[in-house]
Length: 225
Image (cartoon, rainbow, N blue to C red; front, side):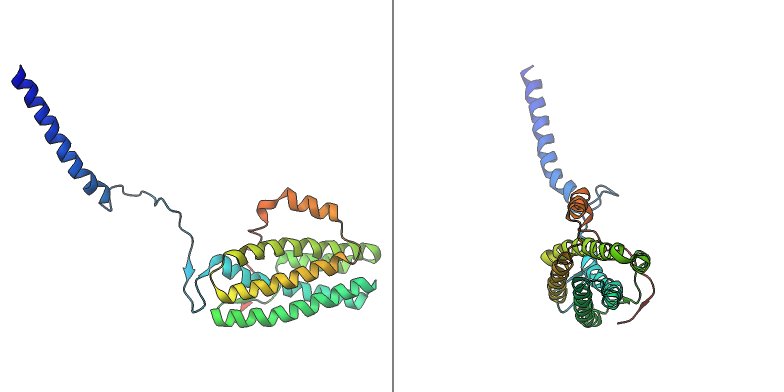
């Protein structure tokens, strides 16, 4: 009986030793679980450039800056031509001046990073321009101020998030200049006296998660910068 118990403990000891040796080999084998997903999520494709990694979010920011100018410059020119009030005229003038400057900046950045830029506004932006063109009188003033204020607020926050996380110096500089311009436009639009701040607050709290991912997933006809 004593011999049987001793033999059993010896067998258990041998099995334990083999198991401890096999454990690290098993868990270090690269194909131990075919089809298993990595524990760390893929951060997404990034391209190395002389100015730092260029991520999808970085590229979207460059495209978005160009898109904003493609519809805000015409909107600003229209406001200057109509000039329903001095404040609306000033807002239109600042829109044109600000996005004309950003247009030069974004083209320089796009050329350096070999990015393709859109050549016309998105369908949604074209709809906004049509909405402005159809509006008259007080309706035009309110539509102009609130439509542009709402869009500037959304883009301001979205670009700020990319600005805080990008590792690309060109994108960071562009984001800084863009947010400075966007804030200036927000301020001058609010000075028109037609911005509905209750609607702005409701829009912000109703869909806060949509702000950081507010960039379009695609854009119309393009051309090399």
